[in-house]
Amino acid sequence: MTARSLTARGPAAFSPIAQRQTSGTTRLGAGGKGATVTLRGLSKSFGVKPVLKNVDLHIPAGQFVAVVGKSGCGKSTLLRTILGLEAPTAGDVRVADAAPNVQAARIMFQEPRLLPWARVIDNVVVGVRNKSDKSAARAAAQNALDAAQNALDEVGLGDRGGDWPSALSGGQKQRVALARALVSHPRLLALDEPLGALDALTRIEMQGLVERIWREQGFTAVLVTHDVSEALALADRVVLVEDGAIALDLAVDLPRPRRRGSPELARLEGIILDQLFRTGDRVAAEAPADALQEAYA
Ligand SMILES: Nc1ncnc2c1ncn2[C@@H]1O[C@H](COP(=O)(O)OP(=O)(O)OP(=O)(O)O)[C@@H](O)[C@H]1O
Ligand SMILES: [Mg+2]
Image (cartoon, rainbow, N blue to C red; front, side, top):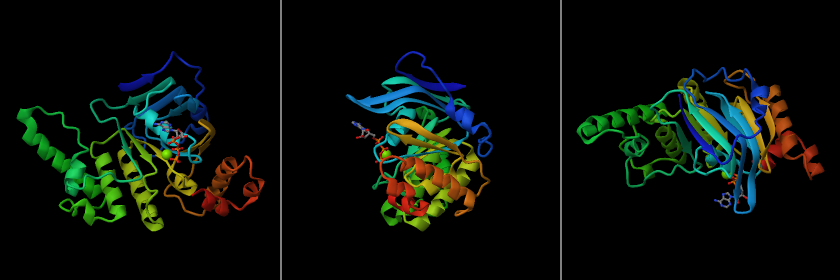
């Protein structure tokens, strides 16, 4: 087993809240292919401004976790710290990979970030880590092209490899970004509001695609989203971040694919929205769940 570990100080008191509350929720998409993620006493400040405050979180291999919370509460910082893109100010981040010699983690953002001067297939090839020496370069390049073609097939764009990114719709560009993130078969896929800029129908379609690929490949997924219904449609577990701490850690132990509008999803949505709007605004707290959802999205 390989592991990436970032430590800012010695061992912190570790209380695996999530492990306790969500045990038994990782049956889907597991298959031993995902990375486990463990945060212990994680804090992150920018200058004097504390953003994450003593976060403990354990994500078992293959689990699909959604992270929700109000704008500025620290969701992206949490994701970036898990991926090692930000160093913790205090505490410990551990990403343990079930299988050695594979790309451990990839991230996908709200915007596709495609290279405009490269054709679609070459944008996906960018996601292949090239470990070959010169003598193996030709074979490696062909392998990378094959892998990129497979990834494009997986996201339903197998016939668009020769196109320029400018010829694609917004949803298609995000599918290319997803193919690029998945081409190296990561053990951890981090998604920072990847569907936020898409229209409602394309978004639902993409949610289905992400769920299908996650179930097929078994990676661990951490999805930051503003959309509570999206979180509940996709995740085994929803973590609500409030002022840099985990205010709610909710297991979503429902069969897949989930039926939108089901009473059980509505009940869970109510719990999350109550927590989100619990402070300050009594009117908001008493408003119907769908009105709050609209206000939050
Ligand atoms: N590199 C940085 N330097 C200074 N402050 C930062 C930096 N990155 C984030 N912050 C601050 O940390 C806080 C949390 O930011 P973060 O991007 O994690 O929020 P978020 O929950 O993802 O918000 P949103 O939903 O709007 O994307 C914000 O107050 C932000 O200004
Ligand atoms: Mg963010």
